[in-house]
Amino acid sequence: MPENASDASAVEFTPVVVGGDIGAYSLARAFHEAYGIRTVVISRLAGWVVGTSSLIDNVRCEDPMDPESLAPVLQQVADAHPGRPLLLLGSADATVKPLIRIRDEIGLDPRYIAPYVDLETFAAATEKQNFTQLCQDLGVDHPGTVVVDLAEEIPADLEVPFVFPVIAKPAEVSEWKRIEFPGKNKVHTVETPADLHELLTTIRAAGYRESIIVQDRIPGDDQYMRILTVYCDADSRVRFASYGHTLLEEHAPGAIGNPAAIITGVDREMVAQAQRLCERLGWTGYANFDLKHDRRDGRTKFFELNPRLGRSNYYVTAGGHNPVTWYVDEHLRGTLPEQGPGSGIGEDGILQDQPEVLYAVVPISLIKRYTTLPEAKARLRRVLKARRVGNPCTTPEWTTPSPGAGTSWPRA
Image (spheres, one colour):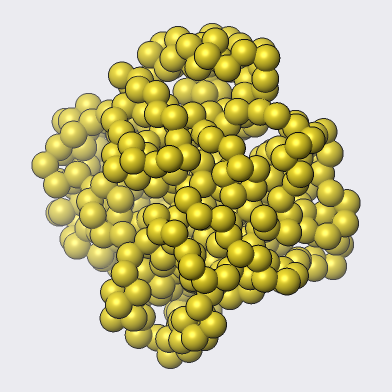
């Protein structure tokens, strides 16, 4: 059991996760590792990682992104688990948003705890044009950005003040998931102004009427990507932070940009900037930030805020800090720790140290092949030599370190 895990005998509850990806499985595994309990996972389909797990009770929903479709399924799950609290989480932005709408507009069984902000705060943080403006207002490092509103006709003389190629991505992920067109990706790299105009025209013709974010393309491959996960209490104070240096990302069209290999660490400056963002937003619960180090000016820049534990959330668990325990401590136990892990960040910005641990969902040989930067190669050699590796899809035989003494993880 990780150092920050709580005694399971003190509270009984059922975790309910909406989403069928590896992020949903990683949450289920985290609950099992901390408390030895099973998780109900609601999904449209049961992929192998969810459908074959002994830790999961899978419940199908025709469209988990549609509140009208999801709400009755949530009630069925509640009816099947009488007399106990239900901790309700989404594994992606597109599933968190309907949970907020059901909680605030349609209504949830009162035993459900959905630990998310309101819809207005959700939009202020997650719609990428809002996030860009917030970074500008607070002096938070971020890439140069142009917002193109596809509710309007696309200007023939659209001005983009960056050197091509540039990045183009949707501001509203939930609506993006509802459209299809040939060549659709999560993020597009666009080579020329003409290509950008053609892409925007194609997207608009497919029915997407929200904004598209066009950004300066920060040079560098996957090894320049970073990840930061923070937990904020009811006063929007960061009580926990987990930073990671990405070595390799997924490259399938639907999953591009998701980390496939991360080495954990600490970056106090990035946490301080995240604290400013969360405080201004009035954020509570988890926020997951995508960042990239810009070798042109030596700054690490914020791309976006994801309103939940990320798809690669097991990197936090692998680093010795099981992330679901903060939800349980705050919402089921009614208290967050005041000392030790989870006790917060002092005025001097001191964070608890995190050991270097490799999170990996791809073969180690692949990570070695694509890790070429000298500093990254040195870190990778260190964690492999120490056998500090965590993969949510395997049964670890090694010992994963916690901030104190090493802890042997239970088998899945």
